[in-house]
Image 1 (tube, rainbow, N blue to C red):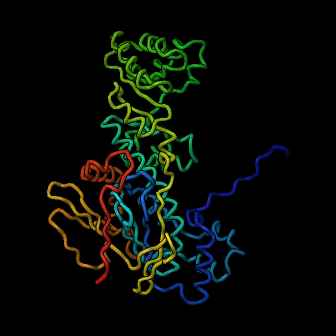
Image 2: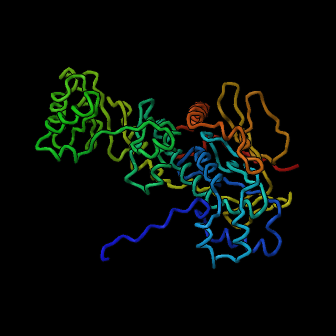
Image 3: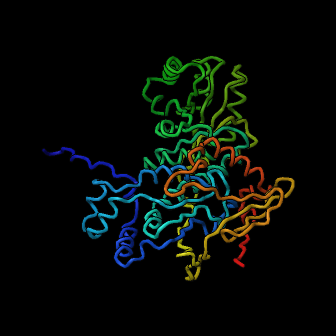
Length: 438
C-alpha cells in the first residue's frame, strides 16, 4: 500500500556495533592459526584535544554493560553470511569474551599516554572489542572532559544538560550520563533518567507561550499545573514584561525565571534588580542559549543561579572525540609497536601511577612496564584497577556507581595544579613520564 511503513528490523545487540575488518581479521586468524595467540591491547590518547589540560575517563560502565551482552545470536549472524566463512560464523556463534580487562576507573583523569584501558586475551577475543571500546570511550571521555570544564567554570552553580535535540538520540543518553558524571546536576533526557537514575528537569519551551493567546495566560496555566516553584521562560516577547507577568502569575514565591537569548550578563543583572523590586527576592535566575565553558566563565560575576547547556555539551565543546586509539602492544609476552611517523605506539603492556606532593597536588603521571615494582611515595597511587577476569566482572566493576565516579572526579580535580584548571590553551596539567623496561 502506498505510504505504508515497512516492518522494522529488530535492533541488533552490541556485537554488530563494530567495523567489518574486525571480523575479517578474526576469520583470517582462525584460518592461519594465530587467533589464539595471547595478546594485549591498550586504549590511550596520544595527545589531548587542542587546548585541553586534562581528560576525564568516562564510558567504562557502558562498555562493561555492552561486553556482558556481546553475543552473536541469529539476528547478528544472519547478515554476516557472505562477510565471513561458515567456520567463522560457527566460532562467532559460541563467542564469549574470556579475557581480562584493566583500566582507569570512571571519573579518573587521564593524560597523553595514560593506559586508560588494557584488554588481555586471545587475538580473536580482544580484537573484536576494538571498535566498540573506541566508540564508547571517544564519545564519553570527550563529553565528560568538556562537561568538567563547564562545571569548574560554573563555580558551584548547578548545570542542567539539555542537548538531546542537538545529537543522535542514543548519543544524547550517553552524553547525559557523561555530563552527570562530570558534575552536571540534572538532565532533560528522560531515557538517561530511566537508565542511569540521573535527576531530570524541564518545564516548558517558547512554544508553550506561543500556544496561548497571551503570555499571562500561559504562565498562569503552567503555575496551575506545576506549582509556584516552576521555572517560567520569560524571553518569548519582552523580558521585562515577561518577568512582571511571571511574578503576577506565581507570586513572589516563583521558583525561577529562564532567559534563553540576548546579552545574558546584562539581562541577568536587570532581571535580578526587577525581581527584587517586585518582592521576588528568592526567585532564581537560570540562563541558557548556546552556552559553553567560556561563556559560563564570563558570567561568573553575574547574579546567575544556574545554567542550561545543550549544543556545546553534546558536541564536546569543539572536541567531539577524545582521540583515543586501541593498539596491540604485546603478543605472546613479546612487546610489539607501531613505528609509522606521527602514529608511534610504545610496545609492551603498561601500568601507571600518579605522583603527588604531600599537600595533595598532583605533579606527574608515570607510565611504566606492567609488573615493574613502582617506587611509590607516601601520597602516590597506582591508577588501573581490575575490571574483568576470565570474562567475568570483578568486584571493583560490579560495585562501581555513577556517584562514585562523580566523587572521584571531584577529588581528582582538587589535586590538579591551579594553572591546569585554566580554560586557556597550554600544556597538560601534569607531565607524563614513560619509564622504560630494565
